[in-house]
Image 1 (tube, rainbow, N blue to C red):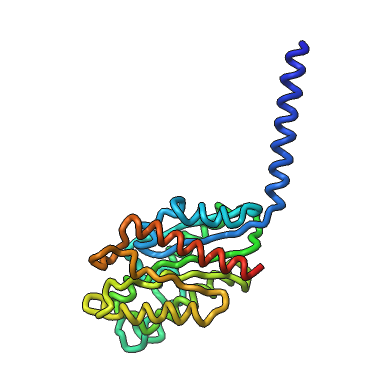
Image 2: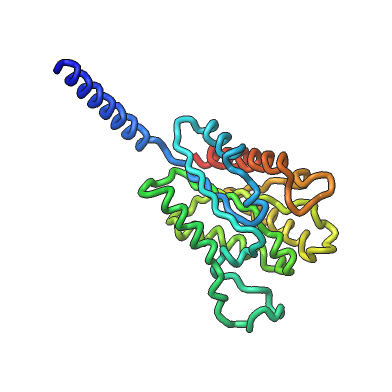
Length: 241
C-alpha cells in the first residue's frame, strides 16, 4: 500500500513539474521564422544549420521555424495581386489576376497557423529564396514591386507592421543573361528591396553553387546558406527588440 502511495505521489509530482515547465514555456517570447521560395529553398535543410543557429542565439525564447517551398515556381504563386508588365501579352491588360496567384502562399499560411496555434510571436522574420523562374520568364521588370507586395501581403495577414525579411539573392549562375534573360535584373531587384527597408537584408549566394556556377547549390552550399540566413535573421531580431 505504501509503495502504491509513493508511486501515485511520484506521478503527481511529475505531472506538477510538467505543468510548471509548460507554464514557463508559455511565458517565453516566441520568434517566428518563415522560410519559403522555390528549388534552392527546397534544397535547404533548415534543421542542419538554420534552426540550430537561431535556437542557440535565443536560448531564453521559443524559436518556431516554418518552411514551405516548391521548386520551379514564379513569385505569382505567392503574391496574389501579381500582374505582368504592360505589353507582355501574358494576359489582357486590366483583366483579373489568374486564379493560381497566391495558391502556394495559402499553403504556407496554413502551415504557419498549424505550427503557431494561438501563440503570439514577439518577432516575425520572413526568409525568401526565389526568383529563378521569374528571371527565365522575363518578369524582372515587375519583380521588385511583386516582392514588396508579397511582404506587405504577409504583414497584413499576420496583422503586424514589423515583419523582418531576408532575401537570398540569385547566384552568379547566369550573370550574362544568356539562358535566363532577366537574371541580373532580378538580382538587382532583390538587393533594391532589401536595401530600401530597415527591416530587410539580403545574402550573397555566388559562392554556394560549386565551381561550375550551377543553378542549384551543392550540399556544403546549402549548409552555408542556412548559416547566412540565420546570421541575418538573428541580426534583424536583435535590432527589432
